[in-house]
Length: 371
Image 1 (tube, rainbow, N blue to C red):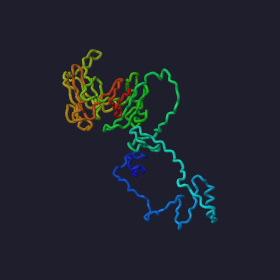
Image 2 (image 1 turned 45 degrees about the horizontal axis):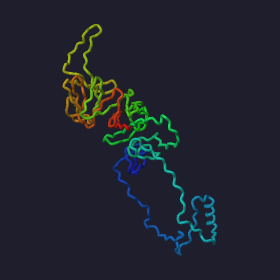
Image 3 (image 1 turned 90 degrees about the vertical axis):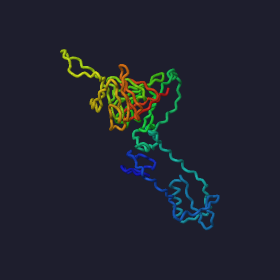
Image 4 (image 1 turned 90 degrees about the horizontal axis):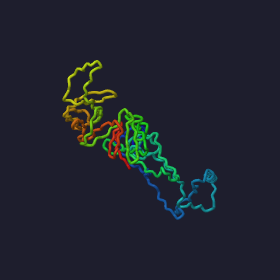
């Protein structure tokens, strides 16, 4: 057993997180040695005859032991006979070699962790494998069997189902959320794998499924938005107001526009920048921006070690992460094979395809559309 250093609850040796408080358990504790609980002098061997008793002449006759379920009356009668010292002349009743045993107690219903799928007992507050909070999650109910007559609506083609698989930092699966309804709300109030992420809005997004196997996701004016991961070396359009994310940096592109004259016809004073087509601003809070970088007409690179804009203190940014370039009059953003990817915030309803990776809150989800 491993004792939690925070709440002192004992946990089994293979658990990684405490079942009482969810804290990570120490891993440097070796399992306790096995103790057989056997007396040092051993146990005297007993030879069994056909009736189940010792046939040695030196042993006294066995006492009758009432079988389970005889009740208090049988136990009291046996005790009274022993106290009075009454010897019975009848031969002892032979007990069957295999007495019927009481039925085993019903097993407690387990609760499957929605994040990692580990089976936990119903009394666990936290998952023993990943530490996910299980409070409020009930055991799955078995659907009641019912007989129904097929209706014309039942004969209609079934809608597709969408699987949102949460991804850990190492890329492994952490849990799957199945969506089969025509419209499903996703957010912190939805529960399951979303309830523990405080960066999700209560009603963050709506996932809709349409006939023909098409699925869409729509941002419901959430605070932190929805981001889609770009494919490597596949450029996407970068328009005025487009927000993208590399590592922990949130960047917004803004076009440089000349200010119009005032209402009385006065031209605004300023130096024109013919060599710049826009600027990148770092979003550091709600309606707050930090540093700004001019985007030249020749384009620029962003990274941790190489490029015109560097983020040397962000370990989630690759050495050379992405490129901003022009083709004709259009500006494009391209991921250059970064380790953690480049994500663009969606500003309208987005159609989902199998293999898409979405960033919502602090969680990554891989999309699978099952038609």
